[in-house]
Image (cartoon, rainbow, N blue to C red; front, side, top):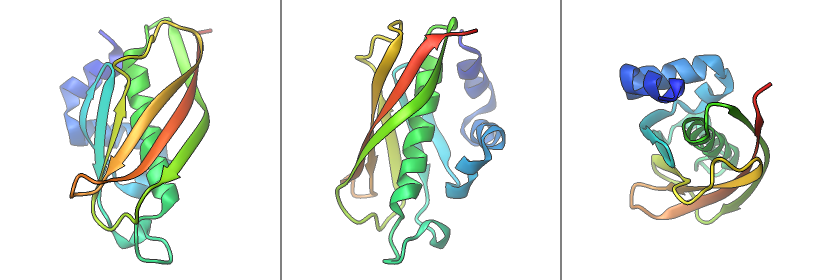
Length: 147
């Protein structure tokens, strides 16, 4: 079993999130909490709080980019074969509506061929508490052999 997935299953959502954000501290800025993580799927939430606001008092676009990269990265990590590695090399985003509530970021990769080396696109959707899409992203992950 993938070591990251094993760690998630053993630690649980909050402790796993704490471990990941200590390893990559910038993600702490949004106070995320993983809700689910498995090959081909990851979900996290983060609160609408002042420290992630823009000048309009809504969740800042870059806070949503932060969540998108985190959820897509962890989903990629538990989906690729253990002989491969990944790194994000691009992100295309769309801001669909003002984010005025707590948010839920979902990365889906059930239909991705995770054995294929090269660039792979990972889709992320961020929903508000009314289940309305407020943000979408396509994050390009470069997948290659571990060195």
